[in-house]
Length: 157
Image 1 (tube, rainbow, N blue to C red):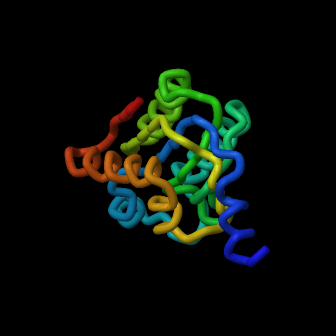
Image 2 (image 1 turned 30 degrees about the vertical axis):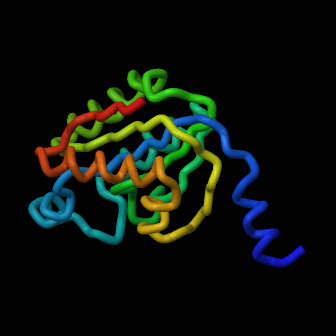
């Protein structure tokens, strides 16, 4: 079997319906500067988001495609959750938003139903957002929501 064929087989196995969740803090670079926080260490918001994402992923048996950062704190994250619809996640997504808002920061969250399973851990940001059609859609919806002011939850089934 050629290496290309083996590579393609690896990526064609295990696709199931599920949900892509993208979480991104709003205007966060400006907030870091305004509050005098370090960009290289967790701060109250990125540390909290790291814990919230970790708990969310554990509860829903999901996996982080990109963004969970223990050294610097989490500012954005792409998560895949197999065998789950966005509607099932709404209460937990609201909880994440409320906790981040309580710290005085906006957060935009997008949950899109589609196929999941093409996980490349430790990939670059661009690949995390464009690796599948569902991730591309989630990223497009995220950008649109942020242009409208952010601090919202978008559910797309």
